[in-house]
Length: 266
Ligand SMILES: NC(=O)c1ccc[n+]([C@@H]2O[C@H](COP(=O)([O-])OP(=O)(O)OC[C@H]3O[C@@H](n4cnc5c(N)ncnc54)[C@H](OP(=O)(O)O)[C@@H]3O)[C@@H](O)[C@H]2O)c1
Image (tube, rainbow, N blue to C red; front, side):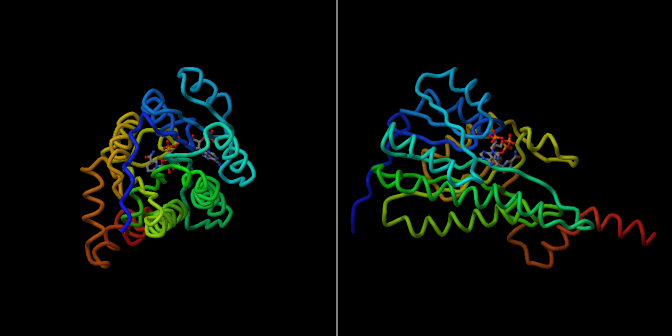
């Protein structure tokens, strides 16, 4: 059996953070910029990337859209030319749209799956050759704790994140022999521009800074699932372990369609 190479400490790592221009990604920039060897940040919003990168020394930015393979290939070439390798890639880019089952719309699914799932696939395709140049590469994808339990109106978002989880778990199995570690990140509710649009209660919501601290702490140990806040994710995991009939009853209770059905019956 080959001995595992040591995990390089953060200060020796070239890190590519994909989806760095707002929310959790932006908070991660502030956590990582002064602690790693080189941080490369990407997203679509060039002004925001420039604002962030001029605050730190060992940071560079590149505009890249995860839905566009050519632009991701260009970003990877930029990293290869500058640094020759990636030690950690954090695929954080994501979007969320909720489904109205009364107006079921495949175009909405296409948008969400293109960014969250195909965006992850594109990111992996371009990052993998550079992770192989690291002494012990690390592939990290930000999915969601929504994957523990199917929630109402989250059909598109939940399917994209569940797909991401499966993809990453399967990558973890296949990449183990190449000494490339893989983690999924499963946040509960985090206050960001994405969740500021939500019109429902978000129990145990934490700040983007708290989320970034939890992620960076998780990155040191490289466990399979970096989930937080624990009081929320443990509850979701417990609910997920219930028999299907109990789980489905709980999901149904939180559906606005069930509320409508109950009021129609009255
Ligand atoms: N907030 C939560 O409660 C929560 C919970 C669980 C999981 N998550 C996940 O955490 C991640 C970050 O979410 P957030 O809440 O911080 O949202 P956010 O503030 O909206 O940030 C999303 C980030 O993704 C980037 N992005 C979106 N589409 C992109 C594209 N096509 N190409 C490249 N970058 C793209 C955005 O940059 P540009 O617009 O500049 O491209 C931005 O930097 C997402 O994957 C989300 O699903 C969030």
